[in-house]
Length: 141
Image 1 (spheres, rainbow, N blue to C red):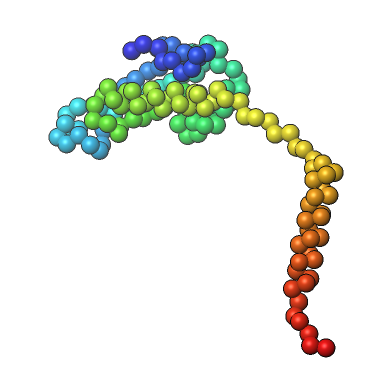
Image 2 (tube, rainbow, N blue to C red):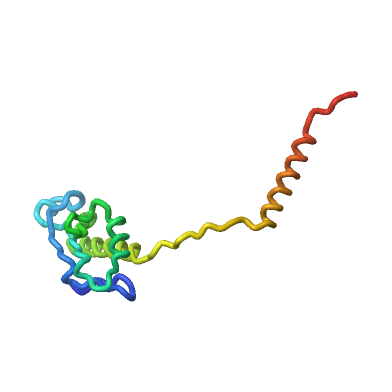
C-alpha cells in the first residue's frame, strides 16, 4: 500500500504502519469463519518525521486506551465484509485522528465587559424592575 496522505503537510510513510488480519465477528455469513477480514492497524508515530511533541501529546489524549505503553497506536476495523474495505476504514480512522491532533486548540483570552455594555445591562435591569413593580394589585381606595 502507498504512504497515507493525512494533509497537505503530513504524509505517514508505509514503514510507520503495520497491518495484520484476524478473524472477525459480525457480518460475513459462512465466510467469517474461513477468512481473516478484520484489520489490526499498528501505527508508530516515532517513525513519522515532522510530528512535534505537541501533536504527539494531542494524539495520545485523543487515542486514549488505543495507545499502548510503547507509544504505538492500535486501531481495529471489522465492520466490513472484506479485508480491503476494513483496511481502508482503519486507515481513514487513523487519518482522521491525525488531522484532529494536528489542529492546535485556540487559546481563549479572557476579556472584560466594556463600560457601555455594563451601562446597557444596568439600564435593562432597571426597566425590567419598573415593569415588574407596576404589576402589583390594584387597590380600591
